[in-house]
Image 1: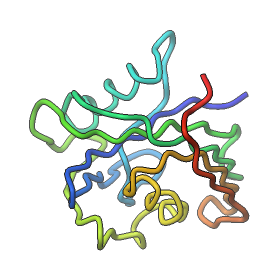
Image 2: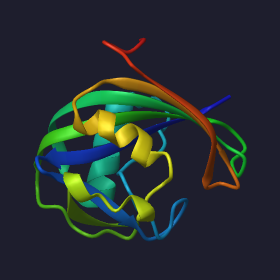
Image 3: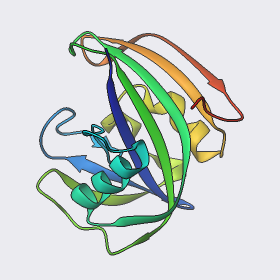
Image 4: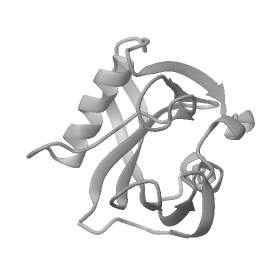
Length: 156
């Protein structure tokens, strides 16, 4: 069994929107916006819902750019995380109970405040390369092993 998740970042070159996580998994880190796909939702519907809940914006123009398969010894089940790049959205980003959004320059992202795997896959995200990556984390925070490959499209 696996947990199906979404992860999204608004991208307006040279800026990337990250959120300071105020509660839940990743508290205190800068992260993308997202969460679990619920019930009969599609992955895209979940991505739109999560962006609205966590940042107060509605994605209008977006693209799936990656899939992350993450095993973390601190979690019961592996994660399958679908990564989206949001080019345009409706509304103004606002702080919510879970996240405080902010814009960061893509050439100087604060990787030391992010998950350790971000510095491996985000360069693919920023350079418009689609990817599938696998990460095994130990102690919840350290990369034990990883693999990343560029793809032309994603499996259905």
